[in-house]
Amino acid sequence: MKIRPQPDPPSRRIVLRSLLAGAALLLGGCATVPPIEQAYLSKPNMLFEDALVYNAEPRFQGSFEPGSPNATGASATGCAACR
Amino acid sequence: MKPLQVAPGRPSLRFLYLGALLGGSSFLASGQETASLLEAGLESIHASDITSSSATFTWRREAETRQWQITASLDEYAVDFVPNALSAGISRPASLNEDRRGVDVAVTQSLSPRWEGTLSANIMEGFSDFRAVWISEYYRQLFSGFSAYTDPDPGSHGASAALVWEAVPQNVFLDLTFGGSQEQTSPGYERIIGPGGGLEKDEERLNAWFATLGIEHFLSPRIRYRHEFAASTVTARDTRLSYRGQINWALADEWVSRSEFSHLREGSEFYAWSVGTSIERDWNERWFAGLSLRFYKDNGQLENALFTVTSAAPPLQSYRLTASLRYVSDAFSLFLYAGPYVSHYGDPGDDIAPFANLYQDRDWIHGGLRIAFPF
Image 1 (tube, rainbow over the protein chains, first blue to last red):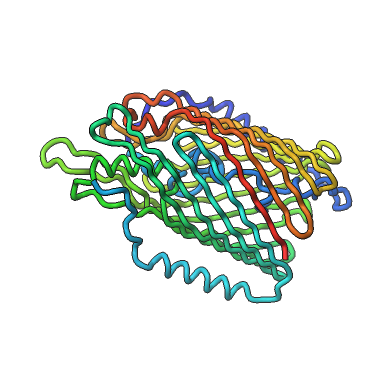
Image 2 (image 1 turned 90 degrees about the vertical axis):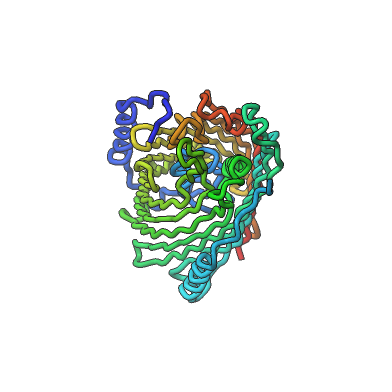
């Protein structure tokens, strides 16, 4: 496979720091909130859900941006029509 | 030269598959119904030479321990194909109109008070996006006279299974999804130079597999966080790994901020990242007005051309600004959004010259309407 010359990717150090920050949030920042204190967390626009009227992501995003996290299918994963 | 046409669908394997999906889902959906929801979405994005529109319809039915959902979608692409000056004499302008139709079925079953499972399957017929339409026309004009050329028959089908675990009751949720799909692409072609000559067809059928781990938890009584780790593979490609973090923050009684960051790598050569944030105000949780900003960047798709010409996209940067308005009531909910979207490609280089008009910078306008009826 021939690779087109690419700009330098971000350094591994940046990626590592991002992962460490995520891990820190995951492990250290986790708080147990009793249900009686979850009024703000339960607001409909605070949820991560698929309900169409609360999901603001445009449908086109995945096919326009091949490295987008919501890009799906083989064509987004690679370069389906590339030659 | 014959016009771009999609080959007659492969025989009924897809329809058998769809029938099995519908039949199985209907069987599983039996049980006492407690609520139903009908959702519809219309969306369009427009530039001077390309318009992409979509319509989706979802019916969701909830029973005591089971949820059943079916979604039908239609995507339409209107593309003004204009070949690069370098291709003049080989290719000519054309107005193209193509579409894609799809069905997605999902069944969610409660397995225990803290476990839930979902099975889903989907099937699509047609081009995956406007880019595939443009590239298909290019190869058709160039190579349809060769016996090795075949009309494209793009489409895909896939399935996935997911488990959700309430790890800490009402506080921490884990979800794990595995899935796979097979995609029939509209392939590229290349002339074989040298003895024998002829035409070389690119990989036409791609198999993709993916796994996703999601973790959702709270950072405080006002902050909800979700991590999403994903891995995927596709025929002839390196494994893709990605991370996406989303944070929703109730800044005040009526103000909510939603932000996200993502990073993706394919092997050691391709990377992409994005960052976005939005802020929304509500009035009694009935009216909501919001504004969102998003930035995306990658370093260009990998290409696998044998010789010197490739249709792989050069590095891309894009910006999106969206204003939104939502109305929520017991009878129905409505969501309206619109804004500009800018896509800016890096230097395409000589190897991509025939596709320079496809990968030109564009200023887009996007907008949509989504509506939901509970009943």
